[in-house]
Image (cartoon, rainbow, N blue to C red):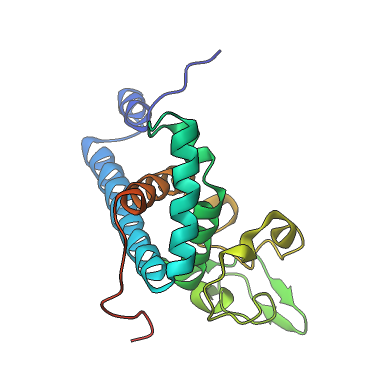
Length: 204
């Protein structure tokens, strides 16, 4: 099998081939570190706040973690994380309600026809993710925290661009799988050891 390189190795290889400068590498690493820690931290905070407000859902997450931990001899491993399907649905629903990148900007590379409206090539478009994630055409009772919106049978027939917390297409977030594992690890560890209670409410 071909050995897969870590990101830094790829950047160093590009430097050796004269494709990048030291400054280019520094910019890439800074972007990756900032994009990879602040976004995940903020999403985790919103999800923990939602779980604190919804004790029944928090208890269900705790129960799922407890079962997975017992089956794995109380060791917190990747296998445990893959078993936490309800927690994953909670994370997805939290990111639906509170997407960290609530707007993304794209430029139309060619003329695009939207029903009766023409978007000319070169137009800068702002995609309002916060609004998309609360559109009642795709999300009944959009303000309600309901992790079961992400049950497989409900996801199957939903429009693929009705849920885009990591963007979509060729410029989507390259770290989304890692971010999901990070959030699962942090939230599962906290819920397994603590009971969360609200001090403030997200609506306020």
